[in-house]
Each structure stands twice: as structure tokens, then as C-alpha cells.
Image 1 (cartoon, rainbow, N blue to C red):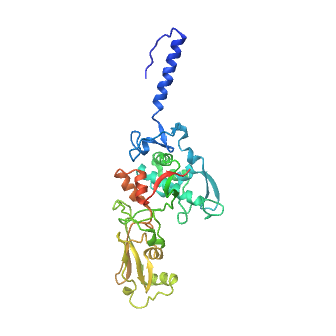
Image 2: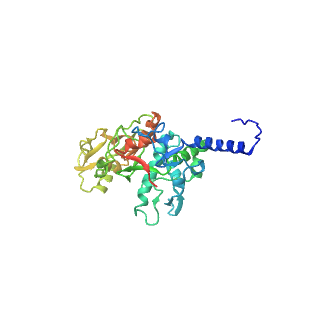
Image 3: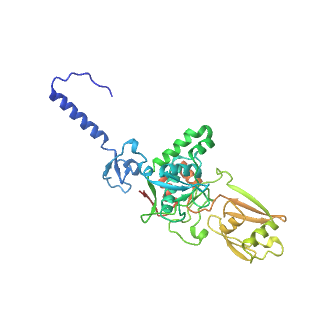
Amino acid sequence: MGREDRRVRTGGTRQAVSAALILAVGLFFLPALVVRGEPVYQRAGAGELPNGELALPIAPMPPAEAAGARDRGRAVRLQTKEGDVVELTMADYLWGVVAAEMPASFEPEALKAQACAARTYTAVLQNSAKHPDADICADSSCCQAYIERSAAEARWGLNAGEYGEKIDQAVAQTDGLGVVYDGKPIQALFFSSAAGKTVDAAEVWGSSVAYLKSVDSPEGEEVPNYHSQTALGAEEVKSLTLNAYPGADLSGDPSSWFGQASRNEGGGVISLALGGVTLTGGQVRSLFSLRSASFTVTWDGAQFLFDVTGYGHGVGMSQYGANAMAQNGSTFRDILTWYYTGTEIDGLW
């Protein structure tokens, strides 16, 4: 804005101008108010909450340098793959998790959803005794994957600046937020890609969880290795099976070893008989190192062919599904509350 070059003849006029400027600045910043610590414009439009009620201002927006302050003020004790325990801020830790767990080329809203899920998962583990000397470890088969920033940037090459900034924003713009059910942080499980639907937790682990239900998932042929095939000879199938399930009867023609599969609505295997022993789809997946429990198995006379769709255990948020939703205009809140049934997004600290 330009300034007028005027001479103020009296002290009283100067005071009036100063007072007017102070009032104008105050009115300029007045709309930048937050509800429950979140910017009003992120929760609803034009001063309204989603239910149409007027948003009541609680506190002014923090200055730009305070963005991400909630995560930066919380520490995480991480057990590295080498077995060392290091202490990081939550913000730095989540950056490394998002970089390791989700392609940085994904849509910003998908990256935000991943940051929130990872933050929630971490919050739950911080209140557990899973690791005696640490809150969480960097082993994805146990907790969550993690990569140091320098290693991630080296892997990204020329895209390092762009990708690093995207993840910075995903973490900062969801600062302190997590997924809650009945006011408590959830077990925010996630996986790579689904075969049309996610899987109810009861199918995989035998226990029903209110917010881990099967829902439609929109990813498809754009997913790398969405369809895969594993070929195993009869002797290898027999050896692997009998080592894990000694009671299985794998005598006779291999074509008779596998029974008819029971399937869920998405086509995933719920249960399957193998040598007279009934296994879950997840158990078969683990036994033969398949990418998911959405598979068919055939005997071609020489080997077993497992044709598989998707990747991961199938419970919770599909990462490629989240990206597909983001491409179609969904926000990170939409994504998370879709994949975690009956949940809300709220501050964890």
C-alpha cells in the first residue's frame, strides 16, 4: 500500500492517525481466529462450523514462526535399525516416517493423512511398553518405517527439494492432529494397496475393532505391481506347510492339497483349507510370502501359481487408496474418517 506524504501540524493529529492505524491493523487480523487450536478456514467456510453453527473464536492465530509448535514440543525416543536409541522431536520423527512409508510424489492431502495416521500410531505406542528403552522402533515389520532426511534426499535426487518441502508441509499443516474414537487415539493401521475393499480386523487377527471395518477403496491399475504372481513347486509348498503346521496331510496328488476358499466381499481370502488344516487368508499369505491375502491358487501340473492383487495386510488406511481419494478432491480429514469408521480428527496434544 502506498503512503501519502502529508505534514502533521499538531500532536493531536498525530495521535489520531496512530490510533486509526492501530484500529485498522486490529480489524485486519480479527478474522484470523481459531477453533480448538485449528484455523477456522480449515474446519469450515466463512466463520461456520460444519453443522452450520457460528464458530466462536478461542484464541488468535499463532505467528508464522509458531507453526508446528505442538509437534516440535514433543519428544520421541526412536530405536534405530542398528539398535541405538535416539531422541527426536515429533515433527522430525514424523517427517522421516512419512518419507519412508509413502511415496513423496503423492498428493498433499494423502501425505497429510499419512502424517496424521503415523502421529496417532506413535501416540498410542508412547503409552505402551512395547520397547523398554524407546517409544517406537524403525522396523516396519514391528512399528513404523523411518528414514533420515539426508538418506531420503539422496534417494530422491533432483526432486529432493520439492519432496522434502511437501512432507514438511504435510507434518506442519496437521500439527498435533490425530485420529480418535470415543475421544481416544486409535490403532491407526495402514498398508499399501487394497483389492477394491479394505479388510475387517476380525478377519486378520480374530478380534473385531469398531473403527477397523471393511470399506471400499478406490485404487486400481495405477498401483505398481498391483497384480503379482508367485510360483512355488509342490515340494516347497509341502516343506513350508509342514514346518508351520505338522498336522497337515499333503499326501497324494498336489492338486487336492488346497480346498475351496471362503472369500469376503472384496474377493480376499477369509479362510482356506490346506492339507485338511483350515488357515486364514493372512496365514496363507505369511506362509508363502504373498503380497496380500487377496489371491487365487491353481495347480498347473508342475507348480502352484498364486495370483495376488494389492499389497499389505489390508486393515485400516490404504495408502494408494488415500492418494486416489485425494486426486478426486478429498481432504485428509475425509480420507481418515473414511478408512477409520466412526472416528474424528482432533488434537492429540
